[in-house]
Length: 488
Ligand code: NAD
Image (cartoon, rainbow, N blue to C red; front, side, top):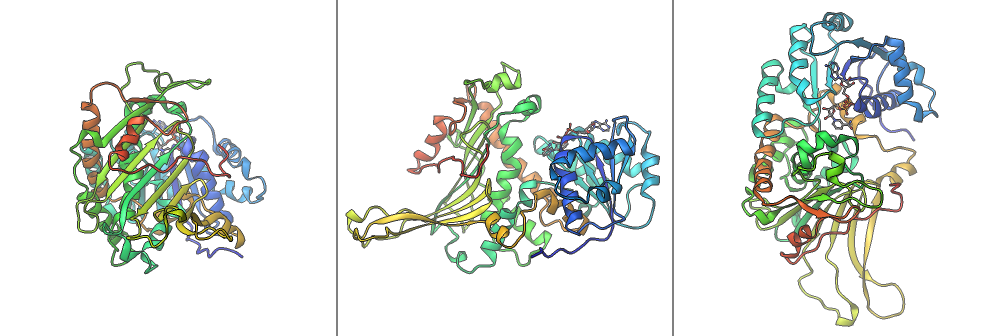
């Protein structure tokens, strides 16, 4: 069986930073897969921009290397023929006329993907416009980070708005391209089952966890300026929170969905209690460097872990805590959203039957994207009425595999959405700014907390103090654990 693929008209995609890590590791493979699926048609031009002194054949050789692991496919020649390369330093004046002439003026959709460091977002955008490359069919794709606080994000947005219409700007958060994240909307809004219980009366609390096993790796200098709050919570975790908490939009279109997400961000109660923000940083050992060693800054005060207790002050969620946590060098790579329902109001079973576990709807983003509903059932067998918790499990890859389909990478979907002009899975300007306003407060609380972030052992569940964040409410974190198929 073949997935339903609607091809897009041939387009031009210009990738600034075409020799960089994101382009090589994510964008080129994503484009290649979409071409193999028949969605990207011959005649499409992908123009990479870089400073490296190579010609188009040199770039095609580089791209062939990036696609090496997909050796089973034999369409690489067709793909490489779509690639072009323009060498330029984007901060200078040379190269822009060449780019403009390669693009021509055939009226097709053109997208400029800013896969460069954030300080280049504005210079590139300004030069694009000055070089006459902006057309009505132009889209600008902006990678993260979009600012480092409210003020810088607002300044970036204001500058971009002076050059491009909001409908032309695609702010990427690749979490939103994940199959499970979109399935979350299908689960909530295409099934009547959950809506009546999706509120403070029936939901005890929500946990959102994005745990990584790796440390800061080669990104130490960048990470030390940023920290987990800005790098992960402002975008990925708050976007997930929005999708869980938002009201049903009237229609599934970009502004209707984003209006509802914005309302959630604006309803977040401002953080007041310092105990609601717990920062940590990992220790070294067993051949692994500590956070301070990895970032090479003994004076660092930035966090590689953060746990937060958030509340949404509206009718649906009043009094329901949303616990967020993310960190590096944790026990396993695991991202999930867990909606923990309240206990059944009364047990008809004798104490010997055992406890009834609360129902938990766990939405896994990685690894093994899928959804699990934890139910309590009778333990099978003749031993009388004994209750056990059991998961109703749906792993998307298995389901897709049975249909002969594979799980598309988030970038495959997002890049094609850009070309189709669908902004539903991209952040609007006001969303980004509202998220920063809330995070700025968390950053201020973390900054005003005396002493460095709490230490935690590498490959643990984070600092003890983060346990207290939920224990003091009489709750527990869900375990951070690998699934059988996780290779790390
Ligand atoms: P990178 O450093 O690997 O690549 C940056 C590219 O920009 C390189 O090709 C470099 O040659 C080019 N470049 C730098 N200065 C230039 C100049 N003056 N003129 C022309 N080209 C220039 O970075 P990356 O990891 O690919 O990240 C690119 C962007 O994507 C960044 O904004 C980053 O925050 C974001 N991002 C990356 C990832 C990832 O997985 N790598 C994930 C999320 C977001």
